[in-house]
Image 1 (cartoon, rainbow, N blue to C red):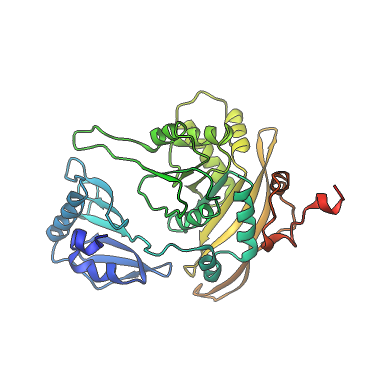
Image 2 (image 1 turned 90 degrees about the vertical axis):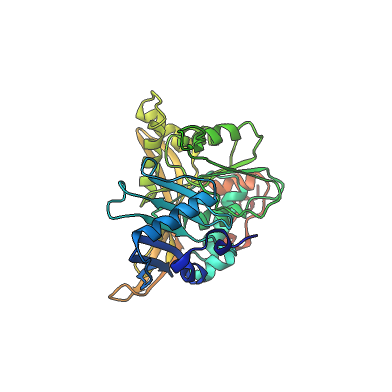
Length: 370
């Protein structure tokens, strides 16, 4: 496979792309270039000679991958051949000149052991999440920009049995599933003449005709949420998606809002019932002040009480210690002591409880002599 350098020739920012410590490069202007390293932002001394040079590079990048950008269409998202994701803007939408953002593609997909070592969650947390996936729970991963939602979704997807047919749907293909029976779909923006756009929603609807066992949507941002919830409610258990929200309850509220974007004429209570019956587990991931990414909450959707979706918190992040300047935070995601109802489904399916959680969540039916 050709590398990013072969595809685009990135000039002054090529050393930043080649640096394995850098996960994202943000060009705010020809002389304002930042990188993300270890979850923190750093300004570099790298510069382009002029805004014209930066614009020439942007036009070269988007042209290489068959996209188009100019004053009439000043926004462009693209995925390079190595998987890196690119966003570019031109004036008049970017007032101070062209901008370029490159999220580098992780050549080596992080595995569950890597996330445990990084402190994203402990073995108990990931054992529970493995049980959720095995029990065909519908999982919603919630978090802010750059919190690690896609990385976590990758790991959760790795728990899906190899016997299942999986359809993935993304704006820009980032998921790296290792299972053999995977169909990957990617949305397409409109061409220069305004035609040819294929939105996420159309792909979700189409995926239902592809006999999927599981549907994995990289991110729900709009009306496709309605179709995703309907899929979860009509036999496609074990599906997953992510969305932007700062807390689990906010994530459910955002899902309601996105359903309304589909133009459905339903009362709010009916939409909440749809959300409550579709989603089983909400996993909240956050980037802390020290740049570390942590699973801060895992909540189970229990049902409805009048007009309110009821939740029970299964895991919660506890801050153990923190430096005054926020440069170092010690934390642990610990069980709250509440027993998740979802595990009964695992037992009913005749599946084994993962070893990591057997002590905390035993089969109560065995204990009762059932």
